Length: 224
Image (cartoon, rainbow, N blue to C red; front, top):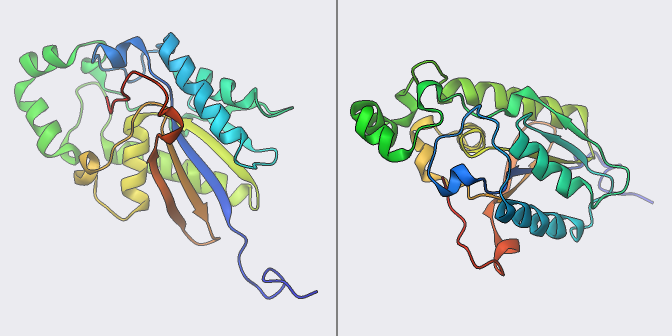
């Protein structure tokens, strides 16, 4: 029997890029970065709903990777528990943006103590170098290397990656051919799902910031 594959058509490699569930610092508008904050109870429930949605998606033995930070690992482990025999592997490519001096400080503290840098963060995010930390271009570089490596090494397989708001936004800007100035043009709510496909040459966006699986939860999801 002749199939599209036998005629030379590329088989798409599916990649699901997720954001971790909520933490107390998300609720309190505290900059997280490399601080190893666990999920709160609401975040664990979010991860459970995300796990349920993915378990119904017809995935077969997906590969699980995540940032080494606790909030991402915990989210990934909750999802992986729905798939028999799955193990979660951490990957430094997807660790959160290092906010340096901003980490552990509230949004109000940042607005008050770093007014000029905060204004630049809001208006020109791609130009910001966080004191003692990273910039978005560096984050996009490592995340892009990571996702392309994973896609190439796992052809015809399904991969689930759990990362962070800044990582996902920086990476998606890069994959869409946008500069990091477009950072605020994309939402990444807690426990959101982005679906991507790799055709052997490029990574294609299929779904962005999907939170339909959270519709029954009373508390609103947030992009912070």
